[in-house]
Image 1 (tube, rainbow, N blue to C red):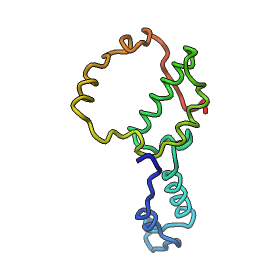
Image 2: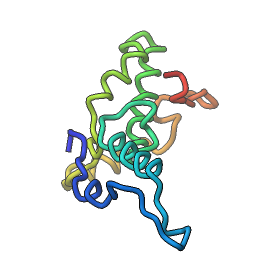
Image 3: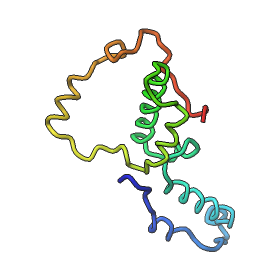
Length: 135
């Protein structure tokens, strides 16, 4: 699913008018309705730094890993500038990083991956932290 997810059923469940009730916990203001519509609309859009937390944990982990690799390549002088990665990621919708099927060959290659950061090429004690706050 490389495009944003549409939520017509979720949208249909949002009331169009405020709900009044004698029980305060059953009331729904127009402001709450508008905020809910806005949240659903934002969640349906492509990835952006300000929408990072609206994505699934798998998507967020993949984005952060890609940004880390991009930063490492930039520092090594072999990659594109880190400021370009959010633009690239803006084409990724919810679920874009989901693995649809795992073949036996893929499973075997994962078992052969380096077990620690030193084997992956990170120097011991290197600063691998990365934050979206830069964007």
